[in-house]
Length: 420
Image (cartoon, rainbow, N blue to C red; front, side):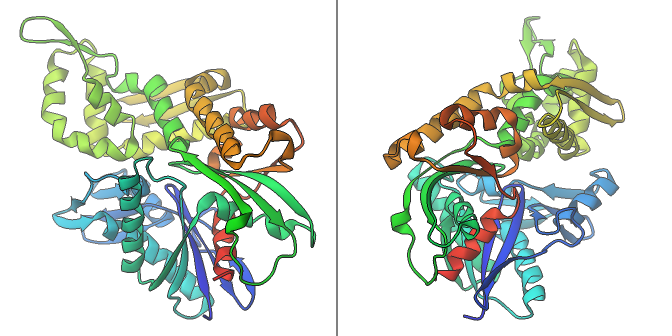
């Protein structure tokens, strides 16, 4: 094989490495992105039938204000969902595998331009659990494999993302140096962990199965934290606390299923089916502006922009004590101050569950805390101070090390490719 790709298809971003000529390289697959070595896992269709992927999709969406187009992200989260088989975009039917294949095809094409020839072989990353339901987890992997084939790959292997991220760190060890690590990979949809032995100077194609002592994961990550901020600090601008009378004059609240859908960015388009109900509520609601905002959010497809504001404020709290969620569009005015203390309170339950998953990963490995030499973390949520503190509280200071949030998994998939 002249070259093998290692492809990290992420909920939020995707990246690509290549193994060729005995070396591994992470490729610049989106030249117009601020991070050229990662491509946003998003697609945009416009009414004219044109298709945009990655940063170009984001730029077009913002330029058009969300009008006359269909913007899709977080497609990876639908892989284990039996209910998502197809969707219609301006009258044309697309299966989930077809949509994901569009992103994977773009990554493949960009990579092939760089290496100068077609590449048929790929190691695909996957989370430890797409779902804790075995049937759904199996369905998700089959769908991802089908999408990868539709993108043009012929020979497909899978590797767990936290193991790939751990392998990316082995290159920095001295020859013969052996350590035991706990790897934490915090993506947009899942947080995955592994306990693994690393040894500097390894060479040759050999299985690493015996070096992996345990793996585990949980479906709590960056997207969940964004949703929690939406529910707790922003959703009241879109009718969370609205009351309205029924036919008998009894006071009713906005249905919980509407608010739950509102708090999951990728599901907001589904609320178009409920616009007639929302407009009826608007007529008698005690806060008509909030319901009007909800209606506009749905009709004008503003969900992405609102969640971008939320994500920006969340990221700022990694370094600052306060941030502001700012959004303005028409009559919608959001200017919410969010403190680090409040944010940490909002995500407390999720972080507690992440901590339990870390402890369970250690338990499965049969390894005491004292035997872990290093903790390596990657992914966007690895920057959140409250998450970092969990590792320090469990393992003590001095062991925590962060690696490239966007490309470490791809590089490790390239390492896996070198072992095929």
